[in-house]
Image 1 (cartoon, helix red, strand yellow):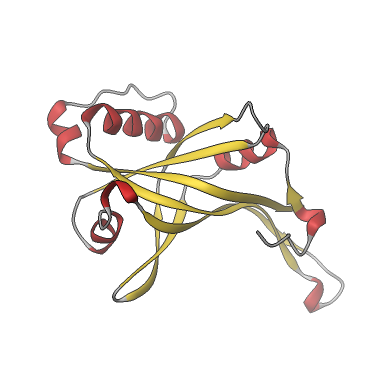
Image 2 (image 1 turned 90 degrees about the vertical axis):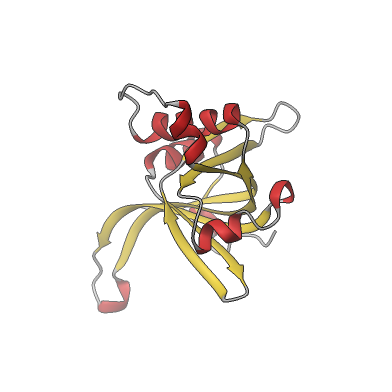
Length: 169
């Protein structure tokens, strides 16, 4: 991967990266189909682990929606082989003032990366994904899913192969 141009803004600490993911409520997925490129914002849940062999964080995202429409068609297109996607998530920090117009900017923390999205079809996997979504978005809410609801909803897993963090104070 290409090195970050503004290296002083790169976030490399695993706990700081996880804090960014935890603070985000929406992930934007970029993908393509025969109609062209598209981006879709989605709520998400996640699994996070630090690999014992290299100390690098591993990120898996969990998504859900109806199993119809353009995104579902694309996300389901290659089954277990998955479809390549780009991800972006950010936390806004507000406008930073400057002495002149071009010195104004915006504070943020963000994650960008790439991976593969695969449909999750087994009930146990779907349930795990739905539980991860609820744990992230509503950690204090009671979580129960009827078997009918689990069967009806589409769940996808994004195996994030590479991601970077960035911040501007």
